[in-house]
Length: 171
Image 1 (cartoon, one colour):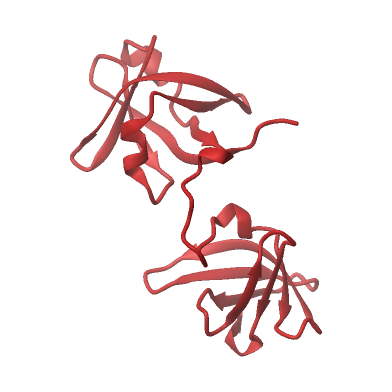
Image 2 (cartoon, helix red, strand yellow):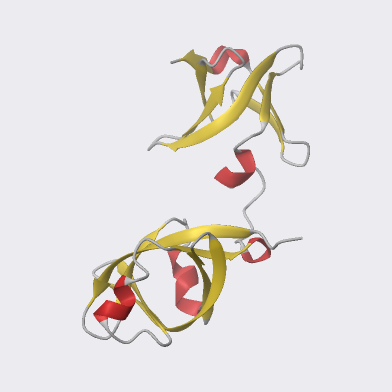
């Protein structure tokens, strides 16, 4: 079985002359980088372990330096590579919170399981709350605010979510 990874960032442009790169954060826990000694880079669709020399924030942007990358030209080869950690190293979320990758693909039913509404294809992060994007069998997209008033039960293990249809907006 292949190891599963959680993408936590993406390498951006180079910084300075010693091979540093900016990190485009894709995590709610950016401080996690400050304690890492290694991370995985997705290179040509394969995850490869890379040793970290240093990480720091510069003007609120994360900068990372890897072992054996010492020039801007060396670093430029890694621009746009994803950064990941093994799934078992993902930060444990509080009860009732879920990772987007856990929600994508879940089947959505009305609360009494009479109507199959579709599958979650995306989660929009908005200032007030997240919104689940559900694609129905008719290819219509439905939107529902990810709040307790409308999302009645999330069963990640069985990949099912039960909602109150009163909260649905059709796109």
